[in-house]
Amino acid sequence: MTVTTPAAAADIATPATRSRERLFLALVWTMALVLSSLPILAGYVLATPEHRFTGIVYNMPDHAQYFAWMRDLAREPLAPNRLTSEPNAPAFFNLLWWVVGRIGALTGLEYAALWSGLRIVAAAAVLAAGFAFVSLAVADVRQRRLAYLIFVFGGGLGIIWIVVKYAARLPEAPFPFTIYTSESNTFFILMAFPHFGMALALIMAMMALLLQAVRTGQYRYAVICGILGAALGLQHAYDLLTIYAVMGSFGLLVWLRDRRFPAFLFRCGLIIFALSAPAAAYLSALVLLDPTWGRKLSQFDNAGAWTPPPWQLPILLGVPFLLALAGFRRHALQSRNDAEVLVAVWFLLHFVLAYLPVKFQIHLLLGWQMPIAILAASAITTRIVPWFRQRYSVLLKPALATLFALLVATNVYLIAWRLVEFRRLEAPYYLTRGEAESLAWLEAHTTAGDVVLADLEYGQHVPVRSDARAFLAHWAGTLDFYQKRAMVREVFDPAVSDARRREILATHGVTYIVTRERDQATDALEPAIGHYLTVVFSEGDTTIYRVTTLHLPNG
Image 1 (spheres, rainbow, N blue to C red):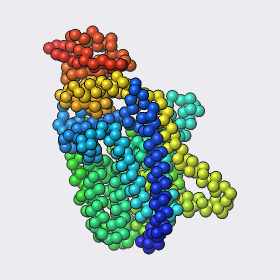
Image 2: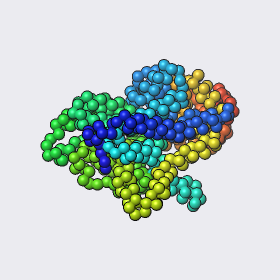
Image 3: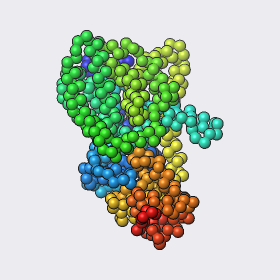
């Protein structure tokens, strides 16, 4: 791998080079922002008066959770967990959504507009921080640009399973986590996950600042790095594990290489840790001491989201990963160049981080794409291209074209997949007119003391659009998720006794029930109208019932 030395950096920083670099960045940024914006633009274009776009591209459950936090944090520094019916104490737990919520309070923008703005800001942050790191780590201009392109646009080989699905006429694609995992796919993050984008940008910036601190011998870069670490810890604390593991291992390798204790690097590490660790400690204490947030984290495995097994990594991480494996050299861990050591140890450590026995292990894939991209670019420029030039020069361009087609194939599919799915105008990305107007009714008539029971597909929107607590809203945020999902089915099932229905409603303090035609709950609830249910809203396919005076069947 060709890495940057101070002398090399001076050689390449000519006015002509900087001008070409700015042009390159402008083209890449424009392409990345335009292509990653296609799904959300299509979502709005395809919407109709009867089918209203929610403004979210992918993963509605988690985004609804974030927006519920944002709604509360826009007004108060602390927020309760309103994705569950149990009353609980408010807490401060996410700096990003607090900031976005405050911006919403100042501007009056609603959540979808705020999300779109955050997506652009996060994309710009990722693109800037990513280029800052490769500029420090890679000296050769072509190799640096190639690494950056791979980092931004490179994806896995999950499209293979899409081909298998249609070729074998399967109902679903096999191994979906090798296709739709976003943490290791920068372009997918730019398209649909701005919270991951902000975290990825902070990781890139912190690694770049560490290199700059070592290169210049100035502590100010370590201070800035630590401050960014605190922000990361209050937003996505898991990623501090990656930061601490990579930076700590880097320091150890420098010590072994130089055969003397790296005092400056050690002091930089202390500064970074001292500034960032309190944020992680606070969130750890919140999870350990607060029963609501502790139980929420304990349900993290409800998503079934684990890092795919090692044999699936070539599909998940794709051609860049295979090239990185081919281009990796053990001697890089003992290189005299700090950037090369950092990239090498960062690449290796993710094999451990991604399989730590923790429920959030899949999140620790975030950031791996950077060392993979740098090593892949090195393999292309120093091994693949010279090999073809020496043996089959006529095949060099076709080979590179095929290589880059494989690099981007899955991301092209992800764009097309979103466009096809949005054309269906279906939940969860579209609300019917009745659903949208019923949520507006809840916003106008409910308070923090209300509990709304609905199917999960609708219930996830309740804490976003109103101040009420949801009976069922999120696979982790709703305490006793599976039991409550079963209870909703019982309430909607006409075969279930009315006594059991009233028991569920009374025990959990339910004040409103929302049903849609597709819930098929009319036969179960109509007999209770005039007894303990009152219809307060009905429009299109959606009906809201108020639960009136209600006692447990034995009371």
